[in-house]
Amino acid sequence: MTAWPVVLLVARREMLVRLRSRVFLGGTAVMVALVVIGSFGYARLGGLASTVSVGFTGGSQALEPEFSAALATAGQPVTVSTVTDDATGRAQVSAGTLDVLVTGPATAPTAVVEQSAPATVQAALQRAVMSARFTALGIPPGVLATVTSGLQVPVDALQPKTVSTQDRVVGLGVAILLYISLGLYGGMVAQGVVEEKATRIMEILLATVPPSRLLAGKVMGIGVVALLQLGIVAAATLASVAATNVITTPALGVAAVLGYLAWFVLGFMLYATGYATLAALVSRPEEVQSAVAPVAVFQIGSYLLAYLALANPTSLVVVAASLVPPFAPILMPVRMAGGDVPAWQIGLALVLTVAAIAGLTQLAGRVYANAAMRIGTRVRFMDALRGGNARRA
Image (tube, rainbow, N blue to C red):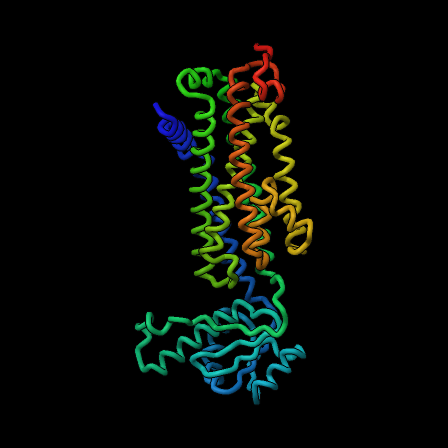
């Protein structure tokens, strides 16, 4: 058989084994439940927020009744007032006596804020604008498609954008999820390699499958299972956010979530290949943790640097580390969630990560091929790399 059919056959075997396991089924159910409960719980607690003061001026005053009713339904305390003119309202926002100024016509208003508008206020404004457009067009509420086009209320911030609390929460969640997922599935690859060595199953597999293709199939199969699980969790997250309006940030949009999944794929290929390579050097399951420690150090370092990235995303240390392949799969998504990242930095990180995966795959194939059949004492990395003799059991 040629290379790809063999790789796909091994990948299919790994997928079937993992998808049928209780770990996959139970873990997926737990993660989805946590996402849904967390979203609705956070939305519920949002009603305990402090009172928001909102002023209306000009034609936007027609939005007050529907706006107040929407916030009352959401449980958000609000104080609504009428402002004489736009300039006065902007001055009150700058002085801090007014949280949000709504100005302009009722069908296309603008929300003026100091830095950002609360999620509940934006959702209530959108509902009020929708009602105003219904009235202006003289159509029944059921005709939704025409009215909702371009409904998003623009926000005119008086100060430069800073990382919002919502973006920080999303960034921290992304860091935690990527850290746990990469460690979980990378460790799964490592455990699988050692178990096959310990039970001598690998000797049967390698009788018909070349080592490099066996490694590639194992990484691909477990990677597809991991991506499927995270895809289910991502879909549950998007659905929960859409249902609750608990977060109004681009960091949890469809495009952003797809970007996080793409970085997970690259990170998994990078770390899983490293895990499998080092795990092939040992023959007992209890030695796996010590064998893969050099790879785990980079993963832990990425997680710790994520907190620095949330506090100061433009730090030189954070920017430089987010471009380096061992750290990029976790740090770059966190930076993307916390604020604007130049496109050239994202592109450079992608290129370097892909290049690192290609180089590590070549190295892993050689080490894996030379160490996979050596049962007993731990094989030295340089011996496996050179293909030198090692003592067998």
